[in-house]
Image (cartoon, one colour):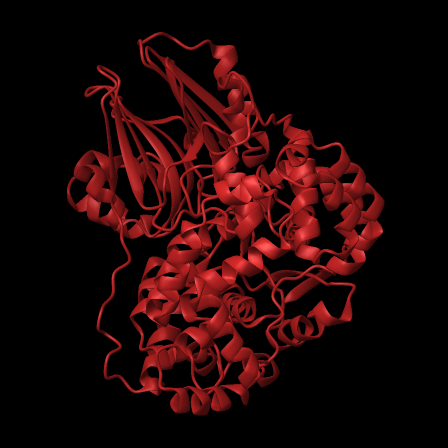
Length: 605
């Protein structure tokens, strides 16, 4: 896991060494174990190394294959050993035990088609000196970031936005993206970022740039695949198949030459991941597996009791931290700077402190349960989508059965169905709560609300929609929080085989009589404590929002008053005067935007 960057000069000029080193050093936190740059006519590449595999200096980057291909790479290809064996049968010989060298050899042999052989997370750039091209690629679901900036003279790429901002004449707000986010709360679903001129390479895409004539080809190399392997299979057999697949995904993600641990929230996903990983780790090392839990100081969001049950049951060496109100206040600027774009909830601070503790415990690789809710239908709004299109009587009967094992009452399920399936109703609610002026409400792009409503009509379509469009911003949170502390996170639920199994299963495998993620519960029933396996109260990784935001009420209002962006797009006086009565999510959004504006010096015009 590392940080990468590069500058492509459209006129074939040489970048200065100081410039690429400065760009590289802006991501030093992503790679404290080494650095390297390479400069050739038309292309400069930089790399910061977080050493996870083959800690020897021979694993440094930029790395070459036969002097023709040069790579800078961020991520992990977990099945590199199996791919290496395939390449050795074809006559390839290797000098390191890194997955980086395997990527180079695979690209040499198969070209862009090599991507479909990789099981992992990645963003990389390969310079082909013979063909004079630069090949940029990103993993299937966008676990690892890759940003692009293009000016009249140059194309820049990097792991983080901060590395690219110096290429722009000014740091300016992307008005369309910001107003859409403030109005609808949707983020991360477009290639554009909140910085004007900075874009993502979309997940599952590659782009190839010619250094000879600047011609550019971009392709989507991956789309979600549905298979029929679970069709007609009894649920008990399906649970066994899923358990085997999920265990293999975790096993692959235990490959490391440094210590591996886990983020243990106490929820079903992290508990399942941690329990299986602990058993594997103990068998391989004879040591106890490290877990880090962040406890909320508010009882309604405190999951520490569940985390303790799992840690005791699986013999996990768990450290519990309780981020305080003062911790929150002292790290506001640091976390906003880390995330680079505004985000929707203070829960981000809980993750930030978990990774800080993991680094303090000397554990640079952490497993996490991210993605389980999207892959196995863990959000309660999926119930309402599942019922959509049923006859009124059948809908009521199914909703009553679901209410037995979830927090949702019949009335709540029906309300969810109305709200998420009727975009005009949803827009009225969103407009009523916003502080944007009518001018900016009318100018905002609300097309995504209608696309979400269309997807809601089928739970299978909604699942695929959210994996593609809702998951990316959650992955951004994970990447930034972990890498801020030089931690690599690995996500077994986003093994592409697990994701494809999740979208291929019958809906009844995932939603059953009110149980979300039913197949996971069935598959883990014999190795997890029942108090965790059959929990009805989904909390999520929440912070004590009311306590924390209440402690900075005056600071928030001061930030709002000083924001030129908010003065330009909101009823500013009403925003400041009525701020305390707004929902906490709205309070955080506007405050977060104002802090982001100040930290990055963002201008509206």
